[in-house]
Each structure stands twice: as C-alpha cells, then as structure tokens.
Image 1 (tube, rainbow over the protein chains, first blue to last red):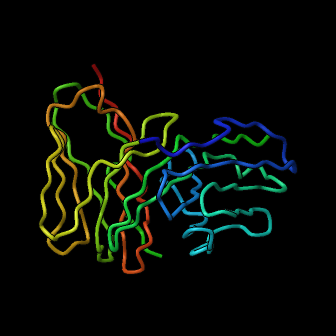
Image 2 (cartoon, each protein chain N blue to C red):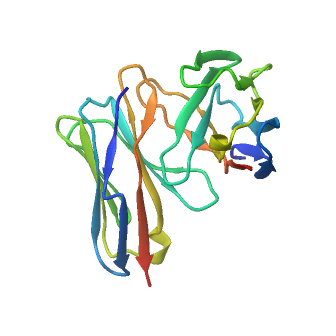
Length: 115
Length: 110
C-alpha cells in the first residue's frame, strides 16, 4: 500500500513570496491533516479535512495560509505572503479514523526555508 | 488547549543501555499514541494504547499507559543505534483531536 505522498520535499523562498505544497493521502483515508513542525518541536495541527470539508482550522493563520481539498482526495496548502517564521517542515497526514483512536499516517514532509 | 509534556527533552546514551522517556498531561486521554521520527521523514506510528494500565511490547520497546490515562512511558531495553530519533507522544482527547507532545530527542552512541 502506497504511503502519503508530498511534494516538493524542499523549498527555499524569499519572504513575501508565495508557495504551495501538495499532498496525496493513503487511498481510502477520508481524513487529511496538515501540520507545521518547527525544528525541535512536535507537529502543530494547521487544518483537518473530512473528505472535502474542513473540520478544524482553528490554528491556521488565515490571513496568509489557505488549504483546499476539492475532490476529497489530494490537498494543497498555500502560504501567501511568506514570513521568516514560516520556516518549518510541513507535514501531511491521513487517517482511516476509528472513533476515539485517530491513528495517523504521515508523509515525509516539505522543508520550507524562508530567507 | 491540552498540553503534553515529554521528558527528558534530550537523551544521549551508550549502545546497550536501557532508557525510559515520559509523557505527562493534566488531562485524561481517550487514547495515546507513540511515534518515532527520523531526520527528514515524517513521524511513524509505533503503538496506540487505549486502556488505563495497559502495557504493550514491541520487540525491545515497552509502552505503558497510566492507570488514570493522564501519562505514559516508553522503555527501551538494550538500546541500539537504530533507535536514534525523535520520540513523540500524541494524545487523543474528548474531541478526538490529536495533540502532540514536545518530543524527546534520543541519540544512541555506538
């Protein structure tokens, strides 16, 4: 079974530029997550989708971050404009979502450096 | 916001030694997971514990869930260089949102 795919793996941009990340979850997983992981810390949830609907985006900085999952499969996360503090690894995860357990399967992440 | 604190934050030991890392919260988990993350990769699920007092073993790794379901520990016996990585606990609370701990960065010295 193929795992969660993400691209690109690395991205370097200047502040105020825009960037987009792509994620393809495990086939059949209805729930998709985007996390931000700053070096040395645990992942922080940015947004959670159930099929193509948003379940939780309470920690998404909506003035600059946006995400979509139009057909309930692939997802994109965009940052516009980027700030220096956005430098982090952006992880996508998917889950088959059993009630009360919520086991998640992660992609390799995209390492973003903002200069 | 539920917080999970892990200790120690960093641990460096010799190959063959034993170690224990801890995950603590003031809130009750409905379930708790442990992940290991290697450099340049995403976290990989190691185990899920659900019942208070539950103990699960995965080869040389032993995971324990506290009786009150507020804490957990991971014990590694005879550590090997391949055990090196960032160990993350993650708790599921009443709303089923997964919250990650602060992480323990483990280095095993050959």
